[in-house]
Image (cartoon, rainbow, N blue to C red):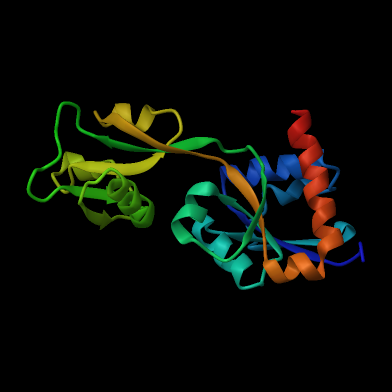
Length: 211
């Protein structure tokens, strides 16, 4: 049934703007006020779509639990959260990467190396793969502060342009992985609303490949 309603969870901010732009290019009629709205649930009845605006880290949770049929999530969130969702399409928006950074010319503490990050799972598996045992300190914001105040030897964080690192006198040491936003779907929704979701994937794919 192509008229089934779809609920899509989207992160607020830059990813939301880029994703809304992609959806419009794919032929979805999203009202202009959609972009300025402060509402957390946006209905687009003419397209039979409902959008839930959430924190980036919550999008995967909403999709896993089925309150959203689909969602748009950064690969960083997916690697960190390891939710039971299907990743169906690389939207190639909001490109950035995860990197290890710290104060230039400093080594890791020999005795008890500490790494501060928003991404404890990604960071611990990266250092484990390098054969290094580190203590992970989870922070929620201003990760760049950690080396400056002596909390950690290194940080693992998202880098877009590198400007924030430079401004805080930090240097990048290792590139961990590239990040873009992905379209994810709930496994049950994928069976129940396969036509509607396939249509969404096909329409978005043709725009992405055409870019």
